[in-house]
Amino acid sequence: MTAQPIEPGPDAPVVRVDALTKRFETVTALDDLSLELGRGIIGLVGANGAGKSTLIKILLGLLPPTSGSVAVLGIDPVVHGTAVRQYVGYMPEHNVMPPDISATELVAHLAQLSGLPSTAARERTSDVLRHVGLYEERYRPIGGYSTGMRQRAQLAQALVHDPRLLLLDEPTNGLDPSGRDEMLELILRTGQDFGITVILASHLLGEIEQVCDFLVAIDAGRLLRADAMTEFTHETGVLTVEVENGRDALVAALTSLGLRVAAAPADGDARALQVALDGIDPYDLIRDTVADLGLPLIRIENRRHSLEDLFRDPPPATGR
Amino acid sequence: MTGSIYDLGYRRYEGPRLGRRHAVSALFRHSLRSVFGIGRSGRAKVLPFICLGLPALIAAILLGVRALAGRAGVENLQLIPGHEGIFQLVAVFPTLFVAAQAPELLGRDQRYRTLTLYFSRALHRTDYAIGKLLALTVGVGAIILLPQVITAAGNILLTADFGKAIGAEAGTLPAIVGSSAIIAVVSAAVALAIASLTPRRAYATAAIFGVFIIPGIVAAVIIGLDLGGPSDWIILIDIGSLLDGANAWFFGVPASGQAVFASGVPTGVMTAAAIVVGAVASAFLVARYQRIAA
Image (cartoon, rainbow over all chains, first blue to last red; front, side, top):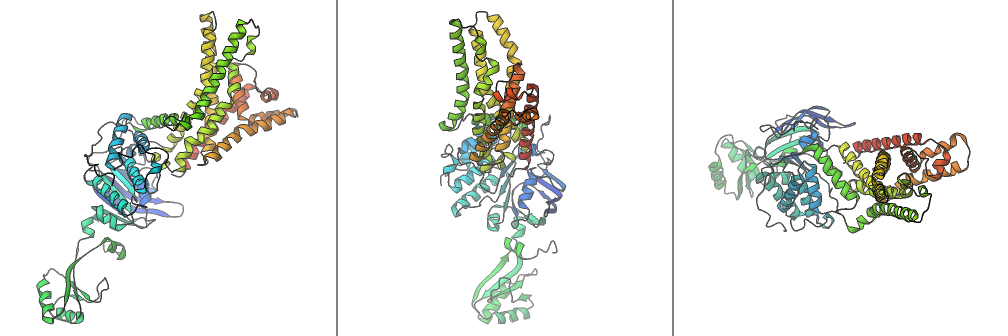
């Protein structure tokens, strides 16, 4: 209980970890992880056991790192865990809501435990339950909620104290497609309209791609890559050309015209070939060549990366 | 979906964040309310309020008896228990109360894994254990102090000499506060230490009853055999007897329980033993919450 309240640094990065390592008795959960995150909706991806939950627990000050340093909003959670947690919201992966009390009672109580005075706690509880779409049901026991409603109540308890940073661990776990869409929509609103930085841990790349603007990929406790979402899904510099038949003739013709052509595309389609762009503009040339050969053209497409590529191919940056 | 009209704009919270001290006090207040079933269903209030009401009723009845006996000219009014004898008369109620409410206080958060939500807030694991311990201690304290307060009020009102009665009551105040504090802390700490071991309410309640009652029976039987020598010290395993002994020590009277009296173990020793039991149970509770999964 410090005399001087510890508050977030106004210009501090939301999260900064430096050479962070966490070893448990038999496993290394985080291995020399360094990272600086600004504001936004940040996806934290990695297979199960990659270290996502361990990182979240360290950011909350619930686990001490084995070595390395960590700062959340400019505060060290290892030393000032309770101060950090006043400004951070956490939605755990599993259902942790007691069924026998109402969302209002639980959320208002938890708001006070996050440091809010009781009047403010009550006001914000009813605000936040309205935001997650539980206003009508707020006095009903949580046990009577659907999975989607319960999950939204669990989001509400993480938002009630107006955190600067919201940590979500697999928030769509167990939801049906419509519940999943509602949850993702809420996360998007939280990040964009409420201006709260969100770290969304998930192994579902489609969801991450849908809502996040920044991506941190970790694998076996090590940083795979951290970059803006657009950098992961940028155009690849490769044109995919697909013809109904006569691919080999087209390959030969384009090669003789001086283009770099590969007949074995990554997606394994026997009708497609790939042309390197190499800073030239071959669209007209390809179109004319296809027309000259009289081939039925299906598409000419500038191929984009998808997040799956990140885990499918060894990333060039790390040289693994 | 239900939330189609929910977009009324998000309001930031710019007010104070009161930190750990406020969080612990909020946890304490919330727990104290739930110890008495306040904010819960009517059924949840039945047992705590029986435990609160019956000791008070017993004290009131004793006062009535004393008043009637006094008017009828009965000489030996001292035979009617006063402050020093109340605990032994109502001792079953604190035990009943902690056996029912300690599992309620801890079990729900473990059972539904709600602890995760507590520990991700502005308090430490130790704070959680201490907040719960304080809440149950105050609950037990209310149960055993209420009959003392009624007795004191009656003693003052039923006498002709107000000044002298107030002086006498003030004299017993340290004994009342001291004995009640030990009884409350020990009952609450032991019950919570046991309850922290299982999320299953029924098991916890049974275990608490077992720990509060069985050693007393064993000790009474062994002391009843009158083997002499150190065997009488077996009384120290019985929490109820320790509390009876501590109560007697504070009031400077012989212990009222038969087994305690028969054992001949000094009440000072029993008081010390009660303090040790309370400290060990509290430490165990705090240590348990360092490790409990959340």
